[in-house]
Length: 145
Image (cartoon, rainbow, N blue to C red; front, side, top):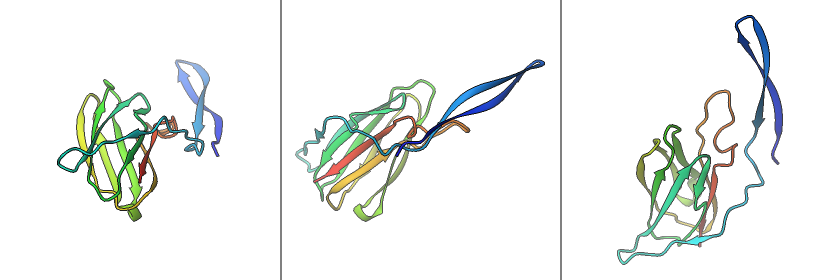
């Protein structure tokens, strides 16, 4: 369930007092992944894909991989100022990662999924008191078959 509310922050400019509306939300249960991208297995047995991190999105945001085979994701940030990260917290499937990706940077994240399932991935960066990047829709899905 997504919960949205409007809060007002007090902004004082000179002798003026202004109320500024700000949207506050919780992580969406209504995340809809894009079309599934099946990650092919290279001759060395590694499943490799590139994921673009942009303004509050991953592209592609739905990857399909095989269980028991290593995965390398090239994570490239297209932002010029805002840092992002790539987070998965699924210990039961050997998918526990929190990898920072600085603005304009590229890193390689290595995973070794051990069991089938559908596992969320997200960016949990935030600038207090604003909603997190995940709250703004920066989520994805790793489907392990």
